[in-house]
Image (cartoon, rainbow, N blue to C red):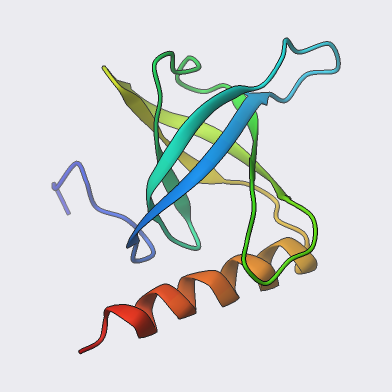
Amino acid sequence: MNDPHFRRSARSAVDLKVSFRLDERDAELQKAGRVSDLGMGGVYVSCTSAPPIGAAIRIYFALPTAWDPVDLPAEVRWTRPGGFGAEFRKLTARQAEALSELVSRLDFEETP
């Protein structure tokens, strides 16, 4: 498929606060942003300063079904002024389950 926005998994519209940082031992403080679309494969983060393409990052956000914020490993796949798209990488079973529950709730809520 030649569509540059082709994704392996569907995304749902959402508006969640998020923080992120480079996935490095001595990475600087987290930066803030907002998630505007989310799926099992990845996320779009609106922010003022995006990490570089290819950067390994950690994305943190609160889920309604979890006591603690979810920490998801990802890789920055593309950037543009005002944000970036990231692909989730090597999710644990617990991370995938929490994310799956949130995504399925979003899909359910969008159905009339």
